[in-house]
Image (cartoon, rainbow, N blue to C red):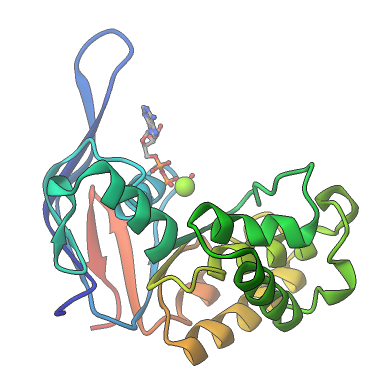
Length: 228
Ligand SMILES: Nc1ncnc2c1ncn2[C@@H]1O[C@H](COP(=O)(O)OP(=O)(O)OP(=O)(O)O)[C@@H](O)[C@H]1O
Ligand SMILES: [Mg+2]
């Protein structure tokens, strides 16, 4: 396999209320090598989440070409797309999106079970991650009883449970106070680097952006490399 991601001449528009379209991304090209660590910073509304949703296979309404692990995404069948989305890609959001009715352990086990992992393996992998992210005392808690930082660590564990090739994080610490954000971010980067998982993260925070090996700026509808 060559690069993890190869995007060429990506264009993305959203329909306007009455008629016409608004262009958000124009002629954007982006290559991400295997096992790399990439940050994207840029003004609010510049299209960071839009781009991440395309990369994460959540949005296929674009023009241009996108190859993920040498597979052209547009040519893939729905079942292959679903399995790539469920197993090869992990997603962490600003709002943790945990399922309130499920316990911490059940929330983390779910992506494994959905993707046909056995109950035992799902349990074992979830427990291991929850220990690493220091949540073993909280296994049977419902999300409502956790602090914001703990909820985010559950969401991070859930995103990693299928051992994805690529982790996408959209402003993952944006909803936490600065100290908690920094603590979680450092902890998370250490895990990602140790496991050689590829990471693309969007942040508003310059300090966090600089912690990536490769830094990009999204402006004027395209991506620019910051640290050549
Ligand atoms: N589903 C949609 N329909 C129409 N317009 C949309 C849609 N989603 C996003 N947009 C518009 O596209 C632009 C880019 O949005 P996007 O969420 O990608 O920005 P962002 O860079 O992630 O911003 P932020 O830093 O505030 O999260 C915005 O102007 C937004 O209003
Ligand atoms: Mg956004």
